[in-house]
Length: 343
Image (cartoon, rainbow, N blue to C red; front, side, top):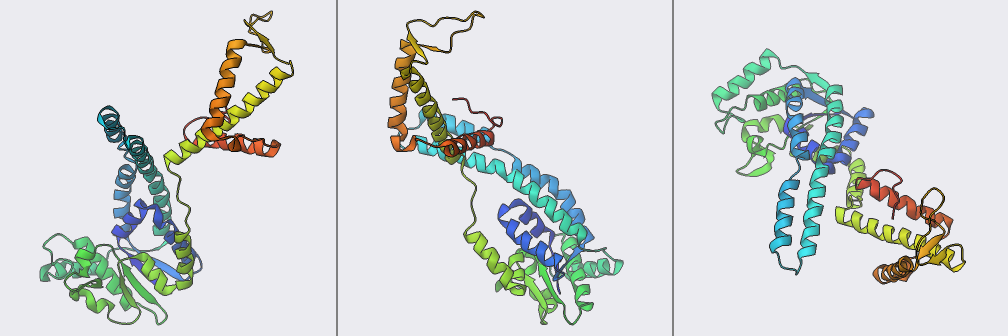
């Protein structure tokens, strides 16, 4: 079995980045199948709990006000060349940043379950004494003259894992804190000389990335993950969504325009100089004024020039339903209610 102790900083970094979702999937599956066990110091649970609120706030904190000021300045003072492209890029950046909070919330929920379901280790008095002795002796992670007691506790818990290691166990310590734990003078991928003895024997690994450990232990799983990364479908940018929504809007409008023209040509709708009214005082729906008809014909011509006749049908009932469904979905994404199909 692979038993992993993961530094809190790794969990916090994973929570902030949606690209780690697939790595979490592999870890969850390996734990479910009994191939991996997480060793979770109580202080890791506590630190993650203290920091998760900050993570969500930082990830979801919109800088829309900044983007708006910059966009307004570009509109007011920028040159025409490249202006529209730059404004679209700023809008896309604002949209993508606003999504980070959603990814963080999803990751945090999954990580919390992994931590609480792991093998939780309380910090014993013996671990505290050994960690304090490291501080007295100025040994890693105290070699940088800062308070590193929490880091030292992790090391001593890992030392206890080594003492209790079974013959079939493989242990790993994963951290992103290379400045405190790595040999920065020689190879940052290697542990600091003060802690090198913890990773000298076979079956004990020091790593700066969780994926590195999982790849060494379960390469087939990670090969599948690599494929998914390479062929991952990225979220659409806001400008792409709005461009597609506009095309669908024009297509739906034009189809309704043709239906109107067909009803006019068949005589179902009468051409008049002034609309009449029903007994209830509403304008008659079976009439159209000459001015409105001329405007409709001009708008139809403009639509054909704008998006091309090849993009304007005709469509069968299934295709027509798909167009309306797509327009409804994209409008929902951009803030409208479901089934809003006004044109």
